[in-house]
Amino acid sequence: MRTETDSGPGITGGVARDDIESNRRIRRVLFGCASITVLTTLAIFFVLFDNAASYFFGARITEILTGASVEQLVTFTEFFTGTRWAPTHATPAHGALPIIFGTLAITVGAAFVSIPIGTATAIYLSEYASPEVRAKLKPTLEILAGIPTIVYGYFAIAFINPVILGPIASRLFGINIGRYSMLSGMLVVGIMTIPMVSSISEDAMSAVPDELRNGAYALGATKYDVSTRIVLPASISGVFASYILAVSRAIGETMAVTLAAGFNANITANPFDEVMTMTAYMVSQARGTSAVGTVEYQSLFAVGLLLFLMTLSMNLLNDRFKRRFQEEYR
Amino acid sequence: MSTQTDDTPFTGIDLDWEHRKNRIFLGIIVAASMFGVVMLALLLLDVATDFYRGQTEFGISLVDFFTRDGSRREELAGFRGAIVASIMLMLFTAILAFFVGVGSAIYLEEYAPDNRITRLIEANLANLAGVPSIVYGLLALAAFVNGVGMGPILLAGAIALALLVMPIIIVSTQEALRAVPDGMRNGSYATGATKWQTIRQVVLPAAMPGIMTGTILALARAIGETAPLIMVGALFTNRIALGPFDRFSAMPTQIYNWAAEPSQHFIHLAATGIVVLLTFMFVMNGIAIYLRNKYERDL
Image 1: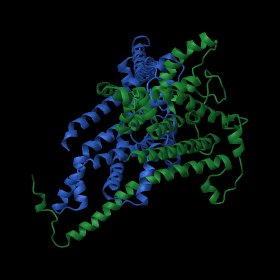
Image 2 (image 1 turned 60 degrees about the vertical axis):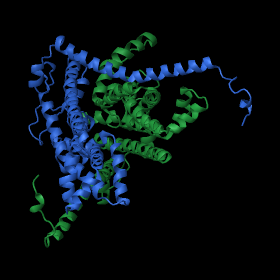
Image 3 (image 1 turned 120 degrees about the horizontal axis):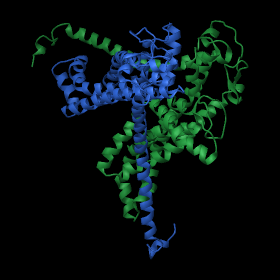
Image 4 (image 1 turned 30 degrees about the vertical axis):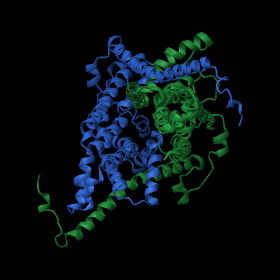
């Protein structure tokens, strides 16, 4: 080892004072780094509200503050209750309900896949699986979680829709399925959120103390009873947190739903129809030449703001459940 | 409370039914657990078959695929420009996110007092991780592409990806720093080292494998991100990007372009691109796992 201390500052004279000064400087730089994350959040809020304002009021907030005239181009009533979404059409319509419907339909459909399957997987992993099975199953599910969403989109458009759903639709219902369908979007988003539900729920279930299980066994409960009536209720806030996270992820999911569900903004009950989610709309507009100042460009931010507020409220809700769970067992 | 159980506690229980119920339940949850595995297998199988059929039935030559850039004509389209752009994106994302991310983590773990501001930063981190990736694209679009006037260039995409992976890098670095035992810090202080000397010469070297692992995993996530790049404007560019100020289309955006085309040839080009993208990801994950296993026992 080198004896660095020989040439180091030691305790000689005024060097210590310099050290204190330079340590303070470093601390300030590091604090600057940490505050960038807060700045990012503030910038997201600012950019979304600022540009969304020009969609609704014809001028950005920054322009309004410097004296630009305000005229209401799109009313909130129209945005939230109108049933035709065509902001770039020659006779424009600004009702966002169809794309909000698209997002919510895909999210609910995906939840019907990911929540039961994810919860069952979590129970299996936490209560039943042998260590060897766990050691194989968990990494496999992690791979499922790590696959890029664009690949899931490809899976939907090249396999789920034409190979699985196509024949079902034509043979059982006599419907000719197009390239895109709502059901394919629900399935693919459901599949990709299974690992989120299973891994977070499993963590919550594993944290349930064994005393509770043993107490139930001592009363003559079977493993089924213990899993469903002791472990699941005891970990329920952690399990709910995983559901909310999966839902939040499904709302913001972009590439898979774009390639699976398509670009046709309509409100439909037919799962084989094409629908457009909020994110798919954003992708469709970015594909064109959405220049600054056009309605296409401004509408991106209006839709983006709504999307952001939806996921933000989900994340805050998730926070509360997570905190409650931590309070219960720590 | 009922007092039925007092004399004959087990009469009301049908043991056969209890057994059956347990077996059915186990069957259901095993089947559910297998569902994810089966879907993963189907997905990989589908991509592999389409990749193979692209070679055999559609005459996609791998040599052409790796030496040509994007093209509107299916028989001329290749992946070189996209691969180069993705590698450059990773490089700039790493540079932008690594130092700031590690710096933030050092502040939060080693310096931050337990006060309101620190708690705000920590809570904000958790929320940033839940922001949809497309929103980061909007941020970069408004602030950098149009706000600063960069245009739809590679650097703007790298900024969007860097902001996106920053929370992941910070959290994994915090974990790596937390894993360094306090004894090492105190030993350093005892020799008269200042706080920064301790961090730079004792804590950071010890935590570096963990930090690298977390960073590589974050970059492996970033390389597959599509939506932010699309919002920044990385589509329809067929020329190869040679620097951070060029227009670009990366691997995932190129795959999206191809997958969205109705032509079967393009679909199979997309499958070939996915094989390349997944190979990149698996290699990066492999390196991260290797690092983790190699250095895990040292602490």
